[in-house]
Length: 311
Ligand code: FAQ
Image (cartoon, rainbow, N blue to C red; front, side, top):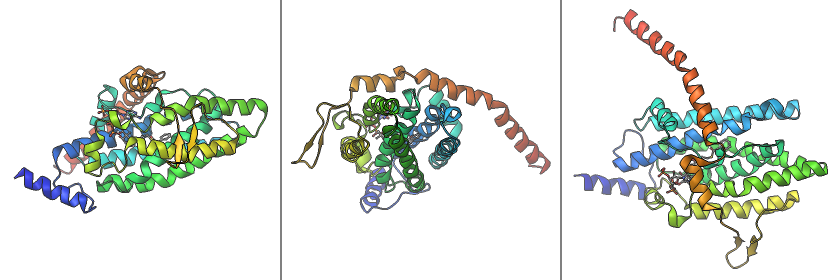
């Protein structure tokens, strides 16, 4: 019966085995993965927009080439992840339609605007930094196709993080105005970056089950703490200050004490009420609608070929 199947499934998970597409899995495991991988794929795609905004205005040809390559990488990550999600029996079209109808989410962080060039540095340093902190453990997630996608993606993300830090270093050591821009970017991106790890463990509805299934390896608060501990010394190295009066090293716990982000703002943003939600979805809808003729042409072509083959 189902109970036996579930027990055998859990035993495989506990034994640290990877689950592959054709293996038996509980329906809720499949649904959870579709939600998480779909959201992750959407984030990679929507995440191109805030940075794409600066490709035409990058300060040098070299910076422009680097940014262009990074944004292209994000498109590639989205594609691996959509493909990995498709192994669970959902189509990419379905996932896209659920994003456009507001049924599926994407990371809260991409609903904030990139106002100046230093923001591109802050996105690479903090947003990619937070993404890596979350994704490195996911290389060991229980679902095979997701874990393999993560291995590839993490390699590219670490290059992204370094390019962001490099922009920050340049700005923080530049003219007083550039330094001010770097500080301003850190001020605006700090708390939204902390929100990327999801709500506090108390409010995280999916963590318990997802950790039992090793879909998630760490809790949201664990990863947020690691991110703060890693990032504060980097801010110090840049000579910038983290916008948190309560930030203090706590010897006993071997980590920093820090202020929680404004969770009310977080829940507003994921409900669709952040500064750029409408603009982001509108850009995705336009791309989807503008591409309709191409999808139709591909289908018509495939049908014609099948007819010629007499199928
Ligand atoms: N934004 O119960 P939990 C990138 C939702 S990196 C929006 O704790 P869970 C790279 C959550 O879905 C960013 N919604 O949920 C890049 C749930 O709502 P639901 C993408 C959020 O899944 C860099 C509810 O809150 N990375 O794109 C967020 O166990 C630069 C309750 O939360 C990933 O997706 C949020 N921040 O833990 C690209 C990593 N947090 O669905 C371009 C994979 C929570 O029930 C440029 N995902 N929610 O309606 C994960 O690790 C997990 O899904 C968490 C959330 C940790 C994000």
